[in-house]
Amino acid sequence: MAPTSPSSSARTASAASVCGEILANDSQLTIQGDWILDHYSELQARVRQILGTHSSSNLQGDLSGLGRIDTAGAALLAELLGAPALADLADTASGLTEERRALLHAVATAMGNRSEPAPPSYSPVKTFLAVTGQQVEELYDLLRLLLAFIGETLAALAYNLPRPRRWRMTAFVASIQDTGLNALPIVALLTFLVGAVVAFLGATVLESFGATIYTVNLVAFSFLREFGVLLAAILLAGRTASSFTAHIGAMKVNEELDAIRTLGLSPVELLVLPRVLAMMISLPILTFVGMISGMIGGAAVCAMVLDISPTQFLAIVEQDIAVRHFLVGLSKAPVFAFLIAVIGCLEGFKVSGSAQSVGEHTTSSVVQSIFMVILLDSIAALFFMEMGW
Image (cartoon, rainbow, N blue to C red; front, top):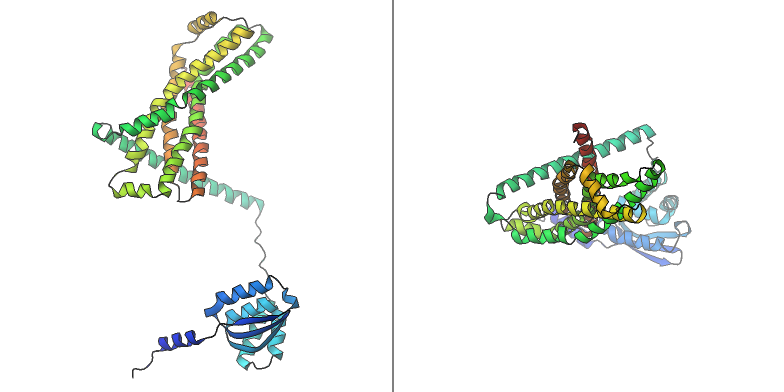
């Protein structure tokens, strides 16, 4: 017969071990069986069950039926009975070998002397610097990833534009309908109302100087240069960027992006380019609609409150407002559209695979898009002012 290996002997001994158990008679507990690491999960569940109904200070134990025990089992007994009670029981219980008494006593002493570690204290200055550094690092990683994705999108765009066979016309037309046509009513309504508010506030202030006629210039100038494109971009950032993120994020959760790559297709070419191009066409159109709607709202207030007829309103706009203001406002629309679409798609690709992640990145795409639109609009305003445009 072949000699038995040490590993097989250990497995046989482990298989022959009897899992420990606790026989409870009110507050009297009888400890039996082997309390070793092999049965730790079962023993821990039983200990927590008893502690859920009894307090460890009221429990009394009987260790006469205790089998094998190691430090893991002794720690559970200390948690069940309390470290001081286990130490006393290890000294007085009958039927225990000297080795087991010493083990129980050592574990009880160690756990009885254990104290909770004091929480580290940091100065407010160090905490502020640490939080600031972490936020700066996160912002750097975000900008680096955004720039990399913009470069990948531009590279795919440069590769596909000269090749009409690779154009995704169905997805492109569907994206134009979603980002442009469906957003047209809300953009027109919002800019009309904002134009009315701007005209009313301008008339209220200029009336003190007897210059209410310049309300026309205020409304036309503000909507042609700023409000038309800014309101349309913010609306699309909240409406369309979140839609892009949720759609692509859901595809990633469902592993559809992996299927696209398995088929040898590029997700950037298939999902990003049609949305980016559709946004770059839709936002200038929506900007133009926003400019006209805002000026119509201002003209309505001027006609009802200031006795400035629509004919006079148009004559003042034609005479005093240069075409360059319209071109300045319209020139910002494609840049804003590109950033909104890219940020929305990038956040969709960053979804980690859960429904919670989809919601978090959808919120993040809206916040980032609106922030970038306002930041770039501020920079553009300063640039055009310095250039005298």
